[in-house]
Length: 131
Image 1: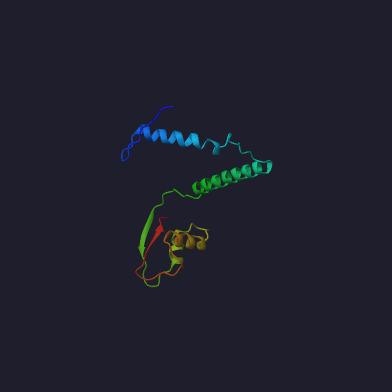
Image 2: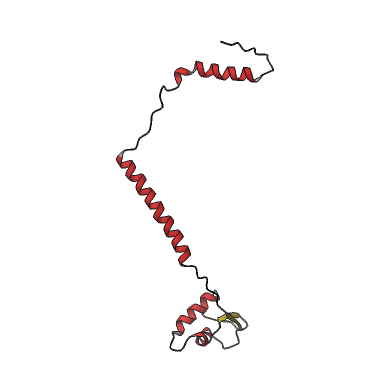
């Protein structure tokens, strides 16, 4: 066994290491002889498997829906300044194909212009898809 000298006020690597080794040797009885391995019961394995499957399903739904709802089409629009007496129905009639549903075009214009109601104010600017 080697002896390390300890000088008060001075600590070097040998002293520090010797103290650590001696403390481990002294406390050896406190350390477990063998580390036990944790095992899962059948019920635990089923729960872990169900959690993994549900995380996978949720992840695939999030990824799948974000790409399917994104409309990346480019659309040409014309900007109009609303005049007194104009209403959204009039603008919707201009862009609705013949035989088409004008109310659908009103909804589309409301979404396109971020409108909560179909009511327009004179001087307001709106965008309308080009025909």
